[in-house]
Length: 486
Image (tube, rainbow, N blue to C red; front, side):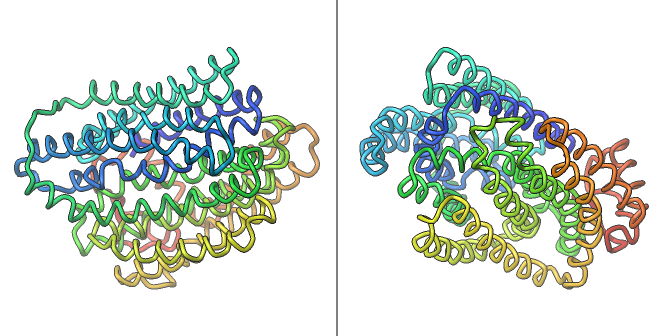
């Protein structure tokens, strides 16, 4: 977990810095153009391996190299086909959104499928071995190259193409790095039987991922079509901080939890879920509250006053990101125990609801679009949580009790943070004062309500776990005495 979160913290900081620089060099329309292309590409991005990567993560050790060879050949083939498909779709996208530049941009970004497919198998093998150090190195290479190339090209006047080329160069750097750190090399061996077996599991994961991708991008489609690329640029930037600071915490946790939960004994699944849920809430709730209260100084300080219209959208999307983060432990548990079909069914219902709402209300503005996403996500994640806890025999009072400390401490934190946002005119000073005072208030409140938790976290930082962990402190965040860390 230390390497996973190290990758998250360092990588997200670099992304945030590069985004802040690019926001001052590029116009909202240029951000919006690339977002339009990535909307459709993102839908296919999750199908690039047809779920074979996750299937390899939980595959038996028997004949693993041959399974990996099969996955490599399959994913590279899929990547090449998708690259051609996206290039062919360029004129359609340009006509649909009335943006001629999308012909070239979509074709170029389509090449990312082939590039990524070259590292998919290595990435899955690293996850299977819980080798997050290797993945961290590769992800840092991606972020550093993408940010550097994007900023340099923007300064040279490449406009939207600075984002496109930086994106491709970052993926190339990631693939090269993952090949260096993962000592596995493909051989020309293919097994149809192994492929069919892995697709049985991977197909459900792919269906779930594709549906989730449509849900995550459907708002971009409606905004791009109905409100234009400038509005989409504002919406895209408004989503940046909730994504970097809240959603990526849950993404990192999910990357660790999926292989770890696959190996957990059935009797331990409830305690593992509760521990994960508690600490996810402890981190993401105060972060989301802080983003809501400090959205305006964040936008003005980091991106500039020309992005002020994205403030309200950022506040709404921070709530959206929080609901997704809190739903991650239950979702990963369902996937790891072979119940991805349940999540798939829920995702289809969620997709139908969000599309209906956007058809009715998207033309009212980007704030309304964000509110629709947040409301539907909150309802869907609650249903998923209830299903997961019922299957794990976790009572409602247990997971609700796990929210008491982070919610109460976040309310205490909101007092100095809100005061700083309202009373301090300088955005940088408001961020500094609000951040420091808010963090101090939150830690103090947690110390008063759950002192065992502070001691436990301090000990875990000093002595990281190498496997399933020591029991969590009795009573911390309403925990069971038998809880373990995955």
